[in-house]
Image (cartoon, rainbow, N blue to C red; front, side):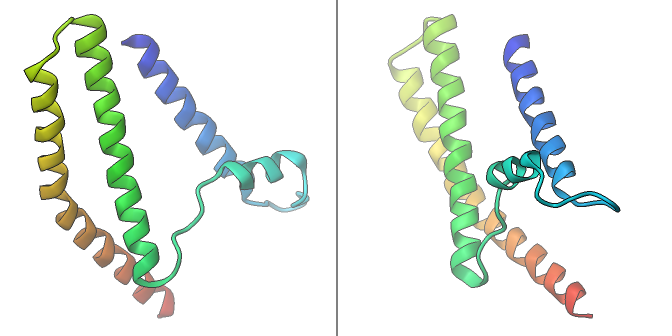
Length: 122
């Protein structure tokens, strides 16, 4: 468990470091090799309009569901040696939770993006 935690925190630290290096400061060249790597690894902004927002929300929800299922299967099948109906219940229950939370997540994402664009235009 500690190893998994350290891997996730390490990955997040590397991501923040790459994003920090991506912003050119005074006297820094914008074409350094680490900047090119940061541009390749950094997540891109969603496309404009509804298709970009829908793609981002669905990608986040699907990615979170797949990660959750990997953790559930890895722990309960590999460590606790529980299988069968529990795993079936975990898959369907998590899918139901995603289906319930997805409209709320989409609405909040839309309102946040709308507020951000409104502030940028002022």
